[in-house]
Image 1 (cartoon, rainbow, N blue to C red):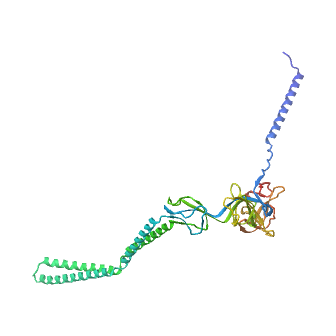
Image 2 (cartoon, helix red, strand yellow):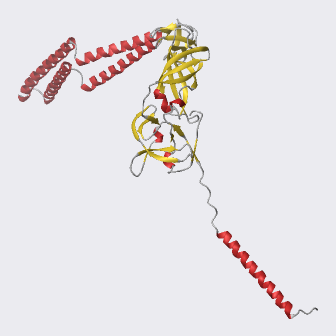
Image 3 (cartoon, rainbow, N blue to C red):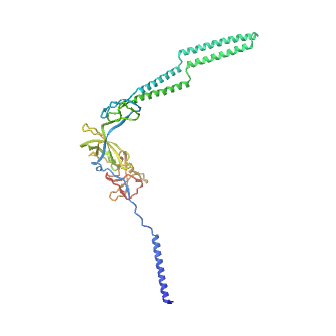
Length: 431
């Protein structure tokens, strides 16, 4: 066994001490690293929807696709069922408002109306008789009273004579009782006859009269229904137009609500286009609309904006805008033609109010001031901007102070933004 010297033992102890120090330092360093706070993550950039206010160049000259439709169009149908006896129109026929386009055999409706009118006349006659008795009936009741009075008087006389005989002992108690009963019976008959005469003179009871009047009102309603049913057997054009389709042939039996013909009015043509939300505020300032159709190349038609949608599509974020065109003599614009629409502004447009969607305006909590969020186009940071608003129009809220043409204004989620927040403009091809 090798003997370790004293100097070697000292050297080993020195090395062990150094190793322990290194381990302690390493553990301390690890603990410091474990306690250190993680590095802060950068705030995510939030995308926002925004519009560029008042920039007429953003819409003028741009063409939006659409499709021609007739101003008025409707599928006509009967409200009753029955066999057809006449269809005097066909596809392409011109009709005026009120012209007959189809007729159902009216015989069943005529009979129903006649029956309803007869029932009503009978009920009215009965009411008249109830309200005032006829003269011959009054005479009969009066005769009944006279007969009953005569019988009572005779019974009274018989009772008086029999009572005298009974007092003298010349008749029996039974005979007297019979006369008493006859006297009382004839008195009751007279009272009943008089009551009947009074009823005849004043009419029936109020309850009976009210019931008869209610019956008459029901029969009057039945007559009106029968008249309507008869009128429904004739189908008429609701407006001037042309027959675009005919769905049935004559002599067929048709059902209520079944389409018979389609009538369209092409005296005016409507074209509906979809306008992005970033441009909808500019549409009210369009002076006129120029329309072109693929089927009529090199032809331009002038129209006017007549309808501006108030709600955007949830998928495309566009608003429907309708342009109306007067139908020219030649060439004719037909429903279904595809085309484009572009807006033209007045060259002298000096309108100072800028329009923003209602969702863009919010109220500051500190001073109740109307504000909008404006996005700096260079660094895409938002800043709160106090504005002065005016009336609400079809294109949005008019802002008369606080905004400049061409500035970007946030249109959604305005209550969850903060001053100086970094955002990402969701610019569409519309601006």
